[in-house]
Length: 375
Image (cartoon, rainbow, N blue to C red; front, side, top):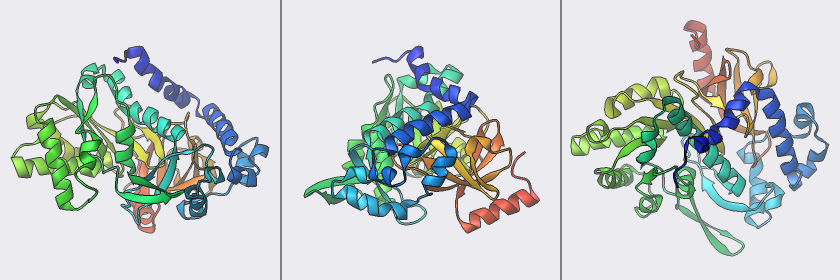
């Protein structure tokens, strides 16, 4: 069904409004999340019903990470979803494990809906801002990881799960005539491996199916988009710009997208906009608002805090140049340490520095000391 301008605007208006008044929207999000957490035994154990403000929330709920949530996930596997989740499990997904062992998460219907809405915002915002409605009449290259990789036993039944990017792609309804090519089912049929030869088989499938199609965009993990372009050049002697008129690239999952990857991507795709999306298995937390090389948070969907060297602050309270460890509360988990460092650039613009690791912190401190990170 064609989705007109009014429908597209409805997908981003709440985000636009939240950027105008993040404090108010964050209060509304916290109130909604507390109501959900009160339905779980985890929330009840931390007195969720008594939380009235941010101070109460921080006093009652500790910051958690994946390891500390594992005992609750074990109960979910046994069929007891309310141990930590406010609603039944829709499916299980896993991370890429790019910085360590892959993590496996249970996700809910609400989470998936938020992934769809927030995940579409970068594209819809771009289309509306540039008035580029032709983009919505084409195909998007599907360079996602497989959605079927492992099997677990839940209540005596086999449940298959795979990488979150592939799972979300498989479930995601697209806009207008826009659709993924190949279908995620075709990607999954090639197997679950992620070796070089596995990816070359996937890339060849993408190339052959998309060769005669109207490809208008690529969306996904940034290194895989670049790897596909290099494969095309090496294998077929053509670059994506030789074959398709790509309008924009929507890139996720790594730091320094605009500075490290965008110039290389344009060598293969042409002088096209590279739109950054800050997403993870746990949610789509922000996306690029305009041509400036920053992301702007989804204040209307997630609750954001940052642990700085001066204590924990709300993300929207950070002044230009302040940075620290990002803590996200979502429909899945309260006060989750996502493992990333974030820096404020002012006016609700932010840059993801990278993973919260010793060398990343040292690199950032040295960069700021000698060169100045923000200009």
